[in-house]
Image (cartoon, rainbow, N blue to C red):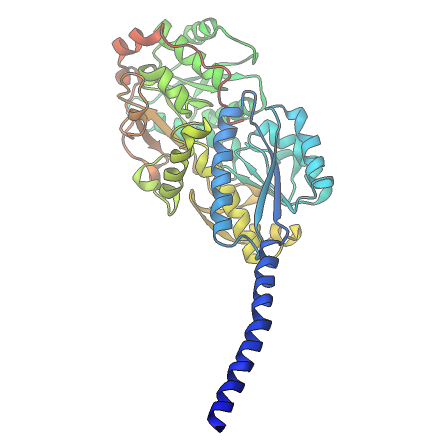
Amino acid sequence: MHQRHLKRTVRGIAAAVLAATVPMLIATGASAQSKEPIKIGYSMALTGGLAPNGKSALLAQKIWEEDINAKGGLLGRPVKLVYYDDKSSPAEVPSIYTKLLDIDKVDLVIGPYATAQIAPAMPIVMQRKRTFISLLGLAVNSEFNYPNYFAMIPSGPDAKPAFTKGFFDMAMGQSQKPQTVAIVAADQEFSRNAADGARDNAKSANLKVVYDKTYPPSTNDFAPIVRAIAATNPDIVVVCSYPPDSVGMVRAVNEIGFKPKAIGGAMVGLQATAIKTQLGPLLNGWTNYDFWLPVPKMDFPGVADLIKKYQAKAAGEGVDPLGYYMAPWGYAQLEVLQQAVEGTKSLDDAKLGDYLRANTFKTVVGDVKFGAKGEWAQSRVLQVQFQNVKGNDVAQFKDMATQIVVSPAGYESGTAIYPYEKAKLMDGARSCLRAIPIVSPAPSCR
């Protein structure tokens, strides 16, 4: 009798405890799900000339958002990206960041994509004392000197020369060293900055500058410019250009048959798959900057998985099908912010800034350490030469045999063909010349 009574009592207590606990557990789960998200705000170029690259970066950022929320979010809260189209227009940027901070009340802000877009956001960010991680902006903080600015671009502490240093190093490392250089640039912020750096590199290499001019951004016909450069007979040519200009310059050089020993340097657009496939063999011999390619020495943890996810989604999103140029950097930008939030267990901008200055971050683009003015502590801008490009199919640009990393030394995947003429497959290049339209609007990184 006593045992039966004891069992009934235990069962009764257990039932009471269960009845009280289940609603609490349900309530707790519902509370976790209903927590306010951490909102990260920014502008992104989704229309206009910067849109192809902006959309590519955004897809990678949305993949990060999915990945972080699948792991439980940040600080026990889900994460929500809040972004607006800046239409590739710097004039749109200030109002967007004002709206994000004053109306949307975002918890954190990050930078937009491109130098010209980042700069107009800086006064607002500085006034509000917000920590700001930008995306592919060249030497933006050289004028502002804002302590809580951080650049996701591997140009390093001496940002302006970094874009073409590898180009000069490649040329000066040849047995037939160049003696003269021509520098041509679009009259826009990024190109002017890159041209400034090219002059510094030319001076360091003791090269005589025989041509140094800018052209209006509205230029469509590049043949007269190429002829003027050719008339000075430079050994090497540095081109600092935006996508439509880059395409026009490549076509004009091929059409005229201009053959310096090396040409390229700081040309935005040649990284985009759409431009690569349209220009095809015309690219052979050109040597130009890039930031990441799937070569063995850049197989950083997580990057292959990101590219796999990106490429699976790219067709449906109508973005760059390969994603090599923008995707790793858009994802890494948020990885750095994520690690700062996790490291400080805070959304406080001052604490985040201190943490970003003091630590190294593990990302899909490798280890990131910030130095003076928020630039990378060490430069890692690649110079890549196009070789053996045949036809206009996409598949060959997945094969790194057509894109050889020739600088810096620690990331080389092959040897530069020098002089430029030796790398040309002129018959194939000339045959496709007239069939290739200039891409416009085309992607830009600045």
